[in-house]
Length: 213
Image (cartoon, rainbow, N blue to C red):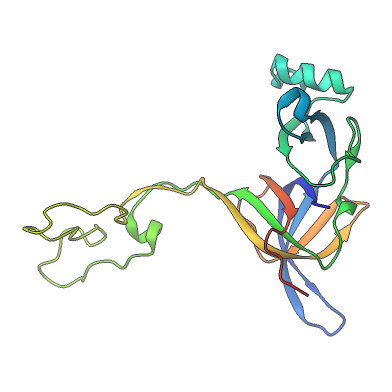
């Protein structure tokens, strides 16, 4: 059965195993998520479930979303996401998805939005090196430099690394191992880092390319 749950990134820490080996982990508050709608082939053309997560004031949600919450009989939630999952027949409107749906030791894919850095130069955005500090290369030493040949092809090729918007991208990190689960606090710890700032929304799903045991 495929699994999916919403959560918020709390930050990073480290845990020690019985042998004293340290593992860097990201702490995620995962769930509880509430199923607010089930889409079917007959009515919507495909099968899916819509889940909600996070507390929010009702006046911050629009009328269509509040209508969805009231029809499901649940309080207003901050986030709404839709999942197409195999084996989701057991999920009904109003049922909860908690972090206990995951298991320690399994592999998951975590999706988040990276930190936004605004308009950035090539050194920060693409890790390019600056120009030489010697005489004749100034006055700017952090600029792009030559972009292409002059006579041929007399144009700049596509995908040239240039200054521009850096960050704010939807990124998925695959095959992160679930190190520890705390059901009382709804906390999941996964090995390594996940995209996004502290407090940002992340999506945890079953790994699409999980390593074979």
